[in-house]
Amino acid sequence: MIILIINSIGFNNRQSEFYSFSQTNGADFLTLYIFKTNAYITLGNKEQTYIPANSFIIISPDTPYKIKTTADICLLDWIQLENRDNSEYLSSYSIASDKVYRLHGCSKTDPVFEIIMYEYYRLNSHKDEIISKSVDTLLSILSDEANTDIHTVSSPYYTQLFKIREKIHSNPSRKWTVDELCGEINLSRSYFQLLYRETFGITCINDVIECKISLAKKSLSETTCTVSSVAQMCGYDSDVHFMRQFKKITGLTPSEYRKQIVKTQKR
Image (cartoon, rainbow, N blue to C red; front, side):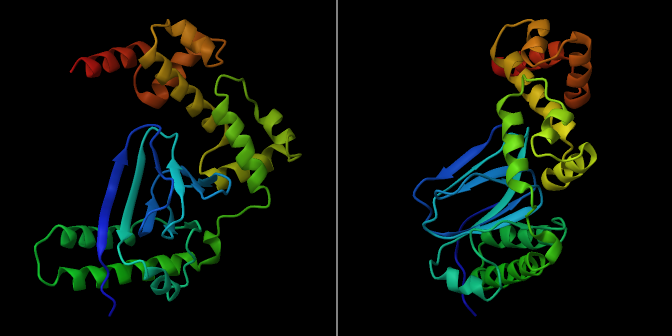
């Protein structure tokens, strides 16, 4: 049995809004990431790739990469394996490195991750063997998921949909409409909305709204602009409509949110 040495590990690691992490020259390790929330990844000189929640990727040593998210919370698991020869070891599981795969969920991987975490921090003379067996089990689970047809992250319109989503996230103040967006790739309104939800795990309209609310939260936190000004800044014609959507998503009114931020900053 190959003994696998873990350099670092994170389980249910929670990062704040707009989390970003990069390895500009690549790492010295084979790194497994399991994404439990939506994120983006850039590998080497390739274009940025969207990663839907419940996905995983194993990144090769020396592959430069950057991970970022625009969600309120980034939740992920990771393991870095020290032995550089683990790339050959990985091939036995039929998992390609530097490729995103989908998961049904994390109900199978979470219990194994918990065991690995427990042993990693435990003083035990047999910990390396236990960890190696547990990692073997984890990779077997991921291999089964990776080789299930429905988990291929692909769509004939993926590139076009991704560019549209980039426009939405880059211009949250714009008054986007579904008709305008589906017209960009000549799809019917209903088919566009179906593909968008299947690709990104969120409806197009909700994605637009969440981007606007994220901009509003940033403005409320970093400026002294009035609520009415923030509403206009985020593309709302009605202050009332803005406040309703803000409270629906955050559970607070814009004024309550600002007060909460001020209290937190004073601590």
